[in-house]
Amino acid sequence: MSKSLWLVSNSTILLGSSVGYLVLSFLIWEKLNGFSNIVWFNLFVFVGICGASLLLSLIGRFIPLKLILAGGIGLQMLTYYLVWSGSLDVTVIAIIYAAGLGLQFSAMPEVGAAVYRQGDTSKSRARSELIRNLVSITSPLIVWGVNSSIGYQQSMIIWILVLAVALLCLLPVHIEVEKVSAAGISLLAKYFQDKQSRSALHSMF
Image (cartoon, rainbow, N blue to C red; front, side, top):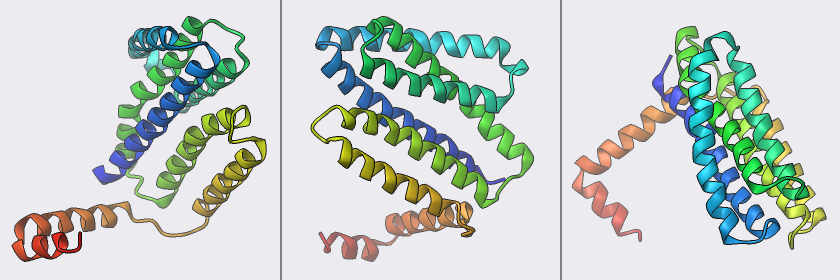
């Protein structure tokens, strides 16, 4: 198993969580009245992530990895709905969201270890991670767009496009993460070693 696939798996989880966190911050600003709630939200997110990570380190060996990841994503999606509906205090919402992030972050090393042990270099792993994180990234955007200036119709168009991309990822197209990573590394190495390549590239800008 290549470490490049492990890196793709974990970095997509981080990307999805970061974009979701940013959108959720805007939602809190808009729905829960201002800056003070943003401060409290960030404070309790930190506490919640630490608590979820600690709890998972104690009982994680008894829980299937897929269940941990599904629980983390579910809590994250639940948070968007709670903020949108305005049915709970920002402190409770922050703890729920942080627990979801903590579960996902804590499971990331285990995801990499499991893939490494199984020797899974197939395209299905990369596709499943991509699809899961496309949904994770775009779901809060859709929720936000339904109740903002974007509008419901435009939000549904975006959502349909995302689903179309996800379906394309399911097609039997051979994805070789190792070759892509190796090509990128070799290009970077050539760039730093070859002065002519650097000057030619810089002259284009």
